[in-house]
Image 1 (cartoon, helix red, strand yellow):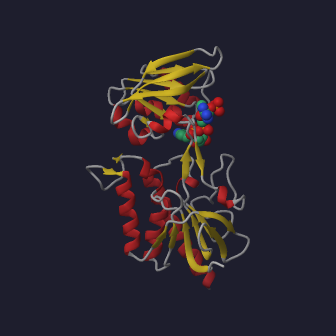
Image 2: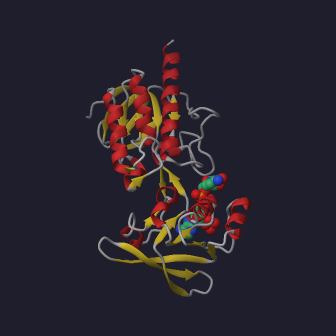
Image 3: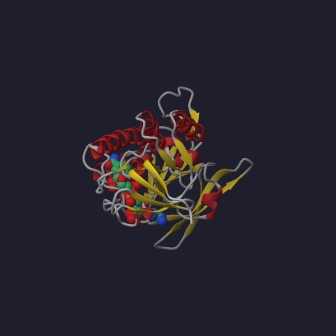
Length: 314
Ligand code: NAP
């Protein structure tokens, strides 16, 4: 049988939130263990240039930024393991953590498992991801100066990303499967009032067209869901804004979540519904979803965990 390892602090998730939590926790002498999950480095490892993380005036590649964050945490003694957490038992302390490898117990847990962008599920979408297909306009809009782009979705993110893209793109077409946006009125009004944005109602993208080596997007095939008519349109970039799925399945309902599935935390705190379990980054943040804000809440979670462990020991 596999050995159970006891830890003071286990951080689940190796993205900006998890590594920053580890950096602060290691410097507070908590000897943290990071179980990095299926995609060490998180969503940033899927982007190329990151120009909006402070401290890198010339920009930095997403994977390199994550490697630097990891190394900084390791410099103070953080241990990082490429382990996927498959379950936890939060009914009593120490908490139990099940992985694909050895099991762990922990006096305190930080959940930093992030969120995954939702995709349409098209084979062509996967083929051109990072080559004109993106799920983050804030990250990638800059590469579409004077280009023609499409945004898929009808919520606040689709509206905000469309508006943001108008700063760069020559034309933005918002494709939505209904005949009106579900975005808040203020954002929807701004979209309608923007001359650079055209809304394509009752429509879905059924294929992304591309060519070349390196590959690049050349167009989209769009289906009108009411008439069934399919048209082809030229496009340079496609931005998916159909929501994010917080990565909480392994919690098996043991932490309170909000209606959209993000972990609920106490106001001005990273404390979850279970004392001794803290959450940071995109798994608890449905609004900002940036690497820098994830890192910020990672710092908060480590400070909250430190206070919790000090009080628990008294
Ligand atoms: P969302 O509100 O869940 O909207 C997702 C949109 O994508 C919906 O319009 C949905 O269509 C569409 N969609 C989902 N799956 C699809 C598919 N397979 N094919 C085509 N379309 C699909 O997600 P969100 O816009 O990312 O917002 C998430 C949360 O963050 C919301 O609570 C939002 O208010 C908040 N947020 C707030 C702000 C802000 O206040 N500034 C900014 C961004 C996000 P249907 O409408 O048909 O369901």
